Image: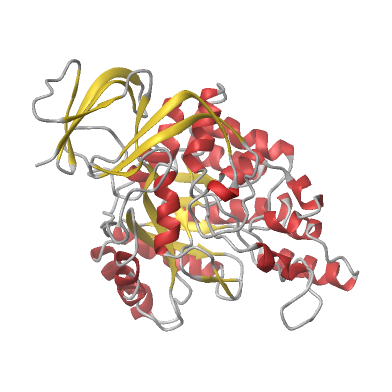
Length: 468
């Protein structure tokens, strides 16, 4: 059995940092300690570097159709990029077809991902149809099949209304599962879009204006109220706005199990990007908000009221982003015809670790929001999220002294641009290991297509606002 000894590094956990060696035997962590004997192990010099658990990107959209257009990354190119960014697990979003039992939504997707994925993978299921009792009750069967989280959209034509969301919250509470919610006010959004288009307002700026802070704020509070009424935990995905942060903090202070995720694009950019010459490249939903919201999100991360940072990775090519100007059939486009989504799977950990290196957050905080907390929230903590004996040897070696610049030409996904172009990185990932096998050597992907495994997410019991 292959053994690898990481010698002399600083091990980072969500709880703190300490100097230690880490011994990997086969696919798992065998020991963590000072001056571990080498034996027959291959030695990796980690002196002067940080040794981190592999990140878990808990929000991706790989090999799917969004806004009527296939995303540019399939399960191989997306997970290859993930590995090169220190992400060793992705939790991808599926969407139930009308009339489809939830285990069937899952069952057809596992083999598709297993044939291609270069890192481990799990799934959330987006619920679009609770019109019959057997559809709603299939939550229980999906949980048994390895899904512990179910997404409700409060917008889009496939989204749930308040009654449907309430029913889903009740059902998931019985099953020990978690509802993740895309919270925006559908009615307000629809009316604004119609108004702006009627006024000839077609540019990317109006994407933001149609779904600004007010559109998010009302829906965040309504979703939390429904969760309280149903007696269910709730996880708000891609939280963007200061009022939403306040609502989450208030609910948690009251003792409710309310959790929140945000994304790097909301932490790094403001709505002013939509005024840029290529503002269409930043179009994602919810839209990027203002500076006050950005500050509120960072403060919430530091105090623990935003528990995870994930990417909502949903990439489209430059030509597809240009559909806001002209559609392939020659019709004039507008902000509603721009495919919604940005890249981020390869830059998630480097960006958050850069912020730690610059002192904006601590390294343990970066590990918490990118690895430990997603593992705990989605029932993967028995295998992922920490450098602990017995867990999978998903490891990232990080040199805080190296510097770098993000360049699309040097990235490993299937995209011809990145919203992160020319972003400065303070510190660099110099290696990634998936279950003890190196998949990134600091320069190139060295893993294998199809090496990723499907992970069964276990139900988690949430008894308070603290992570279970």
